[in-house]
Image (cartoon, rainbow, N blue to C red; front, top):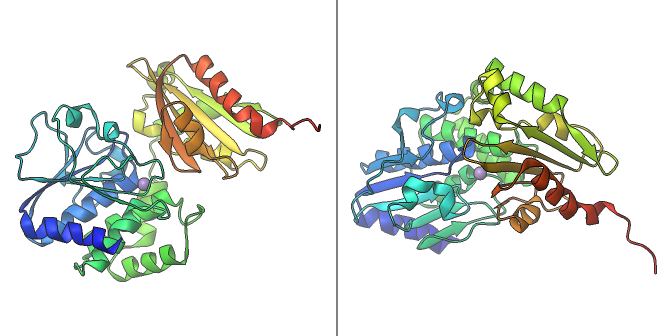
Length: 326
Ligand SMILES: [Mn+2]
């Protein structure tokens, strides 16, 4: 890892222009990681752009310097620009506008086990519970200074991707990094308030309807929800409002795997899968062209909601059907 970190320092020493990219349907870790890295580079007087195909969403506008986040422009940056992607498992997840640039990112910083190593330099640590934690390791190893805005953005990446230090890749290291970030100026209660207690009523109502229609299979070990375009319209909800929509279902003792199927305007279905860990959610998603983490994964597919539900139930069935004794 250390010689990979030095590649970033080399790029920094050689270049002045940087473009930082994150994935479509961004989350707190993608935004927090991109902003923290951008603020580090800016503090070293570099010229930095941050592009997300989906721009900045309402939930994360509170992030310090979030106004730096722009929608990916149709024209690529000049050839001398170093392109860094963060928290993104495959190149298509950077969005169609980026793909139309016909460029390969120079550096790929991520923690998804399914990362396809699509950049020239790939810094991937699947042990890290958040890309923000990996960015922190890079910052510390390269002895870059951390200010309160950088610390706050990294803290948001860590609390959102670890479910506030509950998920399995949370380690002693995560807590010590969190302590260092608080020491550097991140305020845990204010950031948690913004991330977890500032949801619009439209998100709640979308979630309420989705949950009320939950279906359970295999003795309540698998739960499935569907979200239709009608539901978005009825509750005036946005695509970003499906983030963490499965949490109440995951709180049920019996449920090992939960998934939500969302019908989009573009005929593509989106599906997120959450697992307690015995079943590898990333492996299940990979069978249908998606990817992610063992406990949280996703996919996009051209299908019908019922067909996708059945495909997933069939992939899950072997884990719940007792094998006959011979
Ligand atoms: Mn992440």
